[in-house]
Image 1: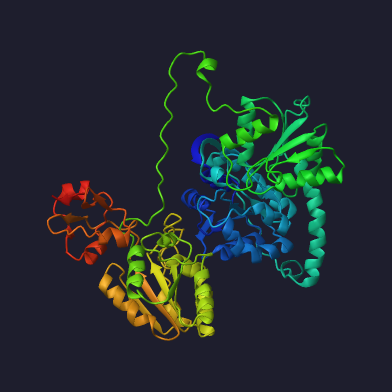
Image 2: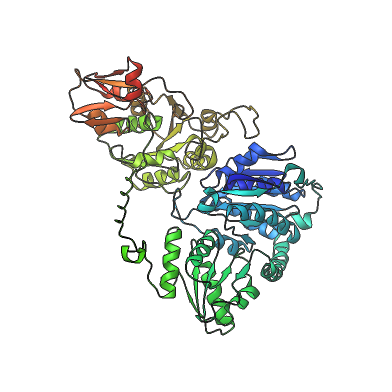
Length: 625
């Protein structure tokens, strides 16, 4: 064993590797992405790794590996589980031979997601076991135990870290490579009575699942990570705390500052460890439940109190003693516990109580608000602006998608009228057009999302004779989640160079006849492309192709010739590029941000924006004075 300073996601990946994982598949999504990336970087020779085309494909690949007896891990974020839910629900009935862990990272807040979806509900819905780690160290150890439980019961299991476990750093004790488990799969053995999901088999397996989960609940009551702390204390107050995930860690820290109450740690919210929970409830009168995101533990304890006629009042999200939305923090948990115990929280001791005549330190200033914005030089800004310019004065709807380009909704672009989920813009554009034939309907989608979930929508549009324009923003990467490869990039997570999947060929293959490709940074040509394409009948596609500025080297900054500039501020007013600012009446370009995309210079009516001629201007950012 040795100690490493790891992100929680890195610790999870190292735990899977130590377990002898044979296959890791997934689709990138914050806060889960680093798990697969770490597994790829530090894998052993026995591990195959892939970024799959979407979460459904990833789960099916992992299931196939588990059918052979291999240990497999599939990774995604909470909204990605919706995509994978079709095979997941059936797989819960079929079961697996090798250990299979379905890692779903939940995002309280939400910090980078559409929803605050709680995966613990999916665990109950699919009747699958769920593991809920409280720290990076526990996540490292728990995922190894999850593989063991999966194999013991022949079922896939959920592993549900939340953002602060995923992205928090800690010193973690991990195994040396010599201590890793080497897992050799037996191979797939044909047995249609086991692997083919006929209705009769599903009925029989449903019965077995219900019986298994009763045994699992008992097993989890004895599982060392489900635990009662201070079992013999706190009885004078007859109050207790129940918590899970990162909220348990916060509760432990808060109780160290107050007093030792009885505390129930729930590491496996499904099947719920009923026997352990009943032991915890014995002798108590009140329990406060602290958890992210939904009142899962709270509902379970409330149910147990009713089932066993226990006179215990259960408080939490349902009773508004804990916020029912957003993530918990150390401060919020400390305040929730303090109010539950009936005393005030003092943020800082007063001068008198501190016994000092020293002047209280000034409070730090509030952090500035930094709204999300497209990067300086982002080709998506140019693509949006070209479409906006071409369609000015027309009745239009711009249906957006999930990715960096969602930020096209911000002023001054204002080019995202709808955004539902990955790939949905195509269907929404079709629906609006069917109801409003006089509306020009556009659907924007990125290159990675096109492969992940937009192709069926494009097929639907062609098949049902829709009239819409599909805009594919091809920046040659999966930018928003960390620049992962996808089928259009020409390389895999295993480092292999492969043939790129040609987006234009796919579009032609499904029957789209009008397909244009344009460089969005050539503004006049892009505007002309949109104008000649938009009014053609049927389904049309424009591929705006320009690489993400984060994966290409800038060509040099632009600067403003103050003698030519007429101060009209059109560049600022219409583009919203963070490299452009107005200071003291002068328009300036921050050379540390500018990538030299030239879009602003193409818009300038006075031709006052020119390439920088000096390294100093490029570095410091200035107008010519």
